[in-house]
Image (cartoon, rainbow, N blue to C red):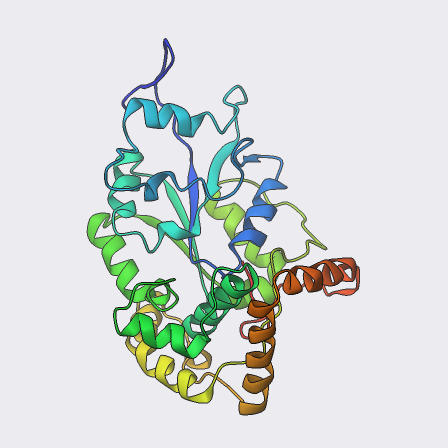
Length: 305
């Protein structure tokens, strides 16, 4: 393995062991926290979650010595017998990331979490509205994206079948552990156990870990938008189900109600019209967080990160 230069010292063989590669709004923050609590796993001590190293712009070579030295500086390398890794959910959808990751380390372990793509898109939109980055309705944002109008990507990030085709085309023997958001929500202990086994570390009790970065939805989506996205994602869901042998029938029929949509639309308009309204609500929700279930949000009932 090529040496990596850090200042005047050469560190031969320095490579991290795993990546959580996606998908955004599918539970990656909860998984990242779980990994950080394992005594034999080290996540970045500097930079936190989402270092975005392998999704750098095309003008940046993430495998150059200087870039790798900066990347590796996020970990302490004095310890032995531990697994190092990071979580950047944007890697799955990034067109150049698979080849970059493969060239970085051929036996890198990849963990991918998938969420029903319609609800993943809606959760991404919810987060953008709540953070003040989106003022359009969900319906308008979806139709704009499908028409090729530039803006926040909500639909393209959920094209899992295409993303996996690209990943395995660039990296046929990639070691990928696929998970579903439902597994983290309904059966977190065994799901974390599968991740630890995949990474080559012993099991660790994470009883009581609370889901992280979960945002309540602003109502529901318009039924017409739900039907549009069900059709848009049908082929992607088919390919994902075939690749992993999953029954994804529950992902194909997105429930939506007009009354819930109307209430959510009113809240969106108030949120975008009054700066800081949602942050006030977030502070209130945080104060009440102790009363929430430790279980991660179920698909369609919250905006998991």
